[in-house]
Image (tube, rainbow, N blue to C red):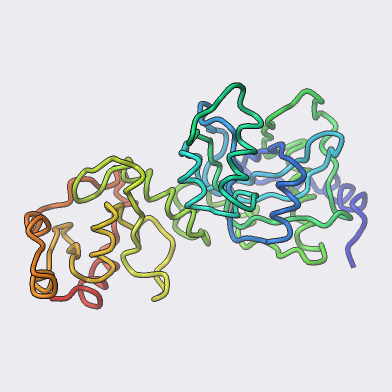
Length: 328
């Protein structure tokens, strides 16, 4: 049985559970967005903004991003853990997250976006995507009142530090997720003995398919690793070791490839060695009596890799693809 929210807040106020160095963000959202996702209980969500003009730089990966409903419902009702902000065409946001955008269809997403954009008739508007992992949704009995200092004119949200109101709010959230009926306690809750934010979060979090696509796309500077192609609609995030074979949704298990190369990679007609050399199988010519364009890349180094070395393809995953997928 859940305890009344007043008890949670008193407990939180008494302990002031501080997580050194942690920040959290309280983002304002529509009740229908929240209720739609609360029924689905997805593994990730896109907390989108109607415009991609403003970059969100408040949080590091792994820090909490909480949901507050529009006034007069001045409550914290759930949240998730920040993965990345990315400005994307609405069509790609839909391809990556589908109903995890909080709407039933791409047409619904466009309708919602245009509701907040003045005189904008763009066919495929750029929207801001805050990718969140492990979202949680609180039952009505455990909704948390906003801190006393919350100003009524806040439209998008505000941040909190890991002390004062921020510490009390975070403790209330932690207790609510642990005590609430039908609330799955997130595995990524930071602890006092050392939160793991930033790069380390991205290597251990349970990321979803949508987050994987966004992270890989941005890590490769939105260019095909083989050809350098930068036409975004034809670029796809490929798993090196497939998810069906227990390959994780991590950037180190991904390559950004042009769609035709992605298909050939999945089928084993091309591969990438642990030294980042492209190899094209002779089976491509034998099976299809063609492939001249692709053989031109045989033996060549990848042209584009993530700048951060820890995000580059893991050699163990590349060896797996060489040994288990490539038609040698």
